Image (cartoon, rainbow, N blue to C red):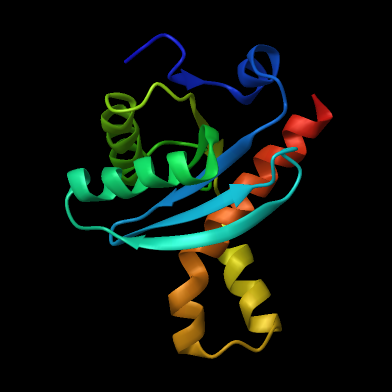
Length: 157
């Protein structure tokens, strides 16, 4: 890993111009939800859900997204337990980030994702989405919530 790989949002705010897209990732056991920001880093939008297969294939798609959207950094949801401790899902997410760091020099920023999936689910229920539709979009919606939280904090720095 290079020195700038895992950084805080505060470190990112100091080192980068605030122009360029960020990508939000909701790393799950079966899928990776992906969201993307606008170039001014103010609004997050759901992009896609990657069905996980092998890391090589998943990473290839993420590299395509970097190129297609000129991504400057990744914001990766960190699934902490409700009491703030780290469980097995955090270890899995950090392992994924370590592997990702080996293939891209982009900064990786962890963001506390507690409640992001629940917030996305609530929003979809309020929109009266069908169960099938919710299942199709929940991961990219969770990624959108993760990235939007980071963008809102970045704007306040």
